[in-house]
Image (cartoon, rainbow, N blue to C red; front, side, top):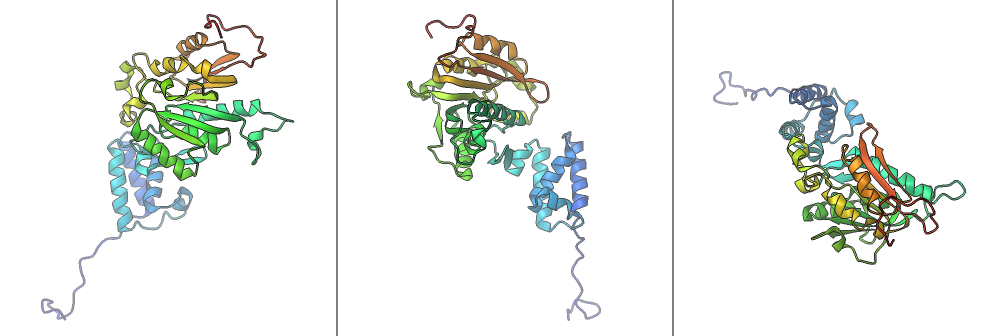
Length: 336
């Protein structure tokens, strides 16, 4: 018995109210995010709550009447604080889904966007069309050789494009270039996490001009790039969340096309006959990029295309096969 108890009996400790249910926490988080100006607040709240409870979203929905544990409540408070401070949701979660892959997401590299998934889909469709035999796409055969032997990914960032090309058996080998050492570290972690080898995806730093990092005699079936394409004057107009990505992954110089020009200086020569060039570009850059392509090689075809939202987003050009007899692109460099 406690001598301090007026009744001579032990008194219970202070009553601790139970934590909120997961449903209450979800509704409260969604309201906070909406008040903070975050779009898709309900979806983001569900993803954050799934993170802190270590459940997938379908299991979370089946357990909304359970109460948060003290640990889950603390984790939720920290995650919400970061998100409301402008930290991208993918950085809060620590991962980002890209096609069939789950990649590490943190401030070291640009967060891959859905538009870039569409770019890979365009490459896949083009590559499969190159290798059609008896109406069957070899990329769909488990043991078939990929339709593209070699590819070059310029500005690989997290490695999303390069890793997807090999993982989905679109290309056999990819050389992935990147200026940022921090981004290369993240890409390496992603490659190792997926289980690909250095022979399949070679990651290489660019310390000077782009083409100085590639052997002079090396040629590719595909050259792809999601380069930094934001013009200098537009950098400060980007949403604060986007500006948290590395500046070198966004800024494309005075008109946003600095890296595109550097890439196009040798892209035609570095493609094998029948090879393709794919670029992700800004929605106002279609006409400029079309003119740059016209002056950068004798293409069998070239195209400026829109993403699924109807915005100009992609550029494509294909180097002709040796037997190509089509009309030469106007103003093409001579001697090729």
